[in-house]
Length: 603
Image (cartoon, rainbow, N blue to C red; front, side, top):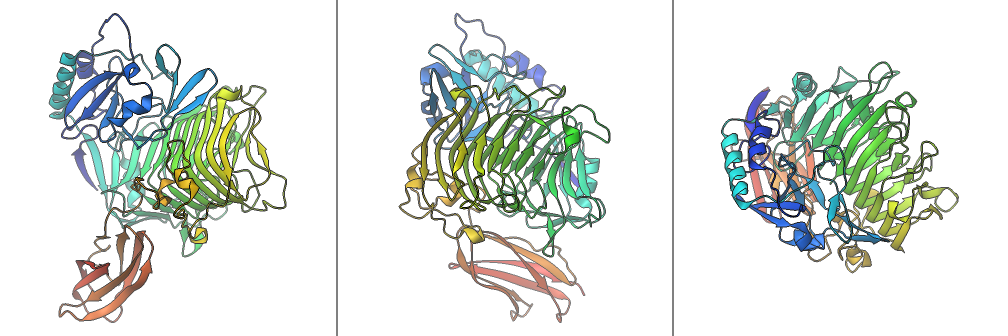
């Protein structure tokens, strides 16, 4: 494993949020300014310049963000510059009686700031006629205007601090057991980088790692278009296999990975991440579970699991984020029946071939009383749900007699095809008992082939449509919307609904980073190799490709791929049977472009 020091917060610096002296620097930089009027302030950082503007003067909020789409927003607190976030294009604006809810559904945690919770970058902003307030929690503080001079002081201190402090990045070699070993040795705040296209396996333990009392990130090196593959080879026997457990004060980020629970077509892993309170019942709080730009597939049970009855009254998951992911052939995406949750965001993601619920929530805190989440489900696509037990796509229910008292937003999404939708009277979407219209909003969604019963109760429901979304090839995981579809302009922002990666036919729609931006050919792994190696490549769009291997004399010795391949990442195994040791070249050709790489066979 190779350890390096990198730049987690600001471009051109080595400033780390985990640096022990950072609060001291920023305390002097972001000093309290006693003006005549306290105001909410957002700082816009772009091209090494820092500017401040009063959020009141830019109401509605969407107008203020127009100038920030190509920059970075940093929310200021009294003593810290807390947030580094990106704004996607066209944030949504929702309205309900008496209160204006500005729902920034495009908020996305910046990869340079891996561990912040939604408590610091709350997605919902409550605003009334006079003044603006963010959702409050124990991490939030009042924002105050900062003098321009102090802003330049802050910028200088950031640059100065960058000379002294950094954050550990750990490069993990592919192979069996290397990831579990790296995680066992990781310290708080470490970021483990995996090689794009390489394979990481675990054949000894039933759990790759338990993350407790520290913050850990496992990320793909590069832009995430070619994903490292993580697999569990261990036979579960009478027990279960899970990729990760998250324990007390643990924070886990998985970014740019392919997590596959199957081996040779047989599903072995049951869970991606399970809530873990220890061997005996005791209070535990998981700080954050964040899945970003991941492909998750082939699990026997839930992706994020808090369904064990022993967890009831003991466990709370503070923040859960699923963004820009594809999940298929698994159990429930988020199953928190017996754990409390405070903030849940599921956005820009596709879920299909799900055996049970899509999301299942109840609500308990450490004392056994109720705790419910602020939940946002935005720009998501759901297909072929409840395969084995015909459960709801979404079920939220009260844990005791206390109703839900936090807002729930389900917006800009497509829900299509539940098992037995024609023959059963079971509920499709069931939001049980909130305090009123302002607590749950369902807007700008498409429903198709769902069960007839919808348990909206008194919640705000508007701009819903029942129609066949016309997916291109859903059986094979292609949910591209047809040209001319009304769903391409049905969103609350006038854009497409559903996961935006499938809106290629819409004008002015940016393709998410999950799809490769260019034509790529990765270095084979392992290299040198004997007797087999894996070659990975990525396509930005569906293309006819040809992948061939040549010897040192330029003679073609193997044809590995020929034909039409869909957009995305692909892996081809090359078994060099009958070939002698030496240097070989593999060449990928598609749409008039070609890439070549060298590899060494050692017999």
